[in-house]
Length: 278
Image (tube, rainbow, N blue to C red):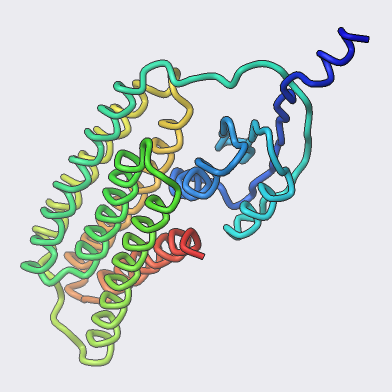
């Protein structure tokens, strides 16, 4: 009797909720999920698998509340499995090393933002200006990741809201400039600096990928950032192609088209971040 009573009054074992999240395909979405769930009552650990687009939430609390929080992000999260367990959630092997890696890619993205923005304004290239804002968006995500360690959930949401508003405002200004140039003709950008600077940005993102890859086997959280940066490499290649077409044709249209696409990516990322403030 006494033994049974002791067992019944013991701590409730944690529950592992497995979610399929179709819209979680890069580090930006992982950051949204982390900011939404970390610090929530009862949440013990989050385990991400971006290639499989799944998330395991280890918790002692209200499973329905966790489902509602994920549904509010609009990533299509669906609960596909649940199990009881007693194992402690795994811990990061080297938190200080993780911060160093994130700080490195933050500095790279911040430097590339300044370089591309300056070159884009001087060469009249909307593609470079748009890519610089994409770099700024990345820097904000990495900076938020570093700043948010150990912070309260309300602080994380406040900074996420500021970041999202800033990104969205810059994207709107970019779209306005695209419309102005489309309707007013506009001189073709200088293709030489456009090609040179976008190639430097490509090298910078490639170096970021190498830095992140060194931590991939130790920390799944950094694998998300690696995928995020891999997407930036594709954007850099798009700007390089546009620069080549501007050089061959002498037309501003390739630059305007790639600028429109990248401004759209920045606006989409801003909208995802703003969901956190709801």
